[in-house]
Length: 160
Length: 289
Ligand SMILES: Cc1cc2nc3c(=O)[nH]c(=O)nc-3n(C[C@H](O)[C@H](O)[C@H](O)COP(=O)(O)OP(=O)(O)OC[C@H]3O[C@@H](n4cnc5c(N)ncnc54)[C@H](O)[C@@H]3O)c2cc1C
Ligand code: FES
Ligand code: FES
Image (cartoon, rainbow over all chains, first blue to last red; front, top):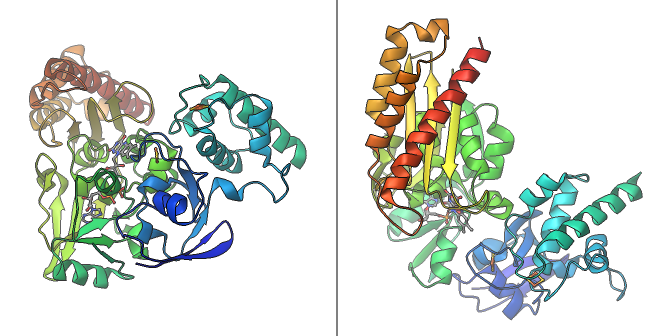
């Protein structure tokens, strides 16, 4: 089947999609957007986190056909066009060393963007709750918490 | 595989009639796992996310009508005040990503003994509204589950909504798992006190082939509360009565040993959860006086 949707603000159209495949597969294998990672394909790890109509979801659990006509935003859509144009959340992850192998990072960045949009000043408990669906096998999470706190603090300064 | 995406409820029901084997899909948090791992290959995938009304809830007389496509996130945000038991249960589901996508209708459709909505819906005496081109049926939720992941749904029927009366008394939900997020319940327990009807509602999860009520426990507790005048006096519940309630809840379970826990542990956990849930609920009831 043919899927037409908006991805990171641009209209996209792909053909010969098998209706039962996941949106994650479509993004990675058919649209050349490998930023969303594929680790578990069962919603457990969060490395495929994206926004579907502005809602944080696991792309591996969205059927390709369910994206028809929808608005998709992936990690690729966060940074600006220039190499240094990182999203503030991405910058915070880099600066705090919240990245080791990096496999979990796109999903955690997207989930953090979602959290800070809902709550610019989350408590530690709220950060943990918001990121409970994102697994990291390397960092031990402490530096990730640092990154979220840093991004939150800068976001508040910017709007103050 | 064929992909059908009806844009109205009527069209959805007609499509299901034409393709009784079609697998409905809403949030996909159960269906997509099965497809990704090739555990299921339906000929037709029937996507219900285009049916806008399924994702809505409304007040209907003295009931709340929750569309089958209402997500856990919305149950928590919109209905936490009106339906606290269901909202408490929803908070324990998966992760934000899963709660944003997973729906009450999908939970019922899967009909897992571990589905977290079920104990809360059982305790609240909820009714499942199902529909086909042949008509509508209202199925009390305790008649909806017929076996392990089996439900009373006929092949041509779809779940349309769940009807729940906002409670006249406190509700509680308790769930045991290995961590605070992303866990399938080892055992779960839902409790609702219905002072208006002088009755008690319970729901047991993950400790029998189906979610089920602990009817003997409900009757014993409600009867004693009436006999001792406690509904009106709101005096403390005697320990002996709380113990008896907890024992009867444990006895109502029919658990198995599996990777998540042993049968003996589940029964024990249920007794503990029942006792605690009753303590919390009764304290709420006393404070509400
Ligand atoms: C990582 C992860 C964590 C999870 N954690 C929990 C948890 O903590 N607690 C819990 O209870 N569940 C959990 N689940 C399971 C799942 O999220 C829930 O069962 C959820 O409610 C399913 O809803 P859905 O809309 O995604 O269903 P779908 O996957 O779309 O559908 C589920 C089933 O219901 C059928 N169906 C859907 N809608 C209808 C309808 N209107 N009429 C008839 N049949 C229908 C489908 O055909 C399918 O059989 C988890 C799943 C994942 C992947
Ligand atoms: S790949 Fe989607 S949650 Fe793991
Ligand atoms: S940095 Fe390796 S999984 Fe998180």
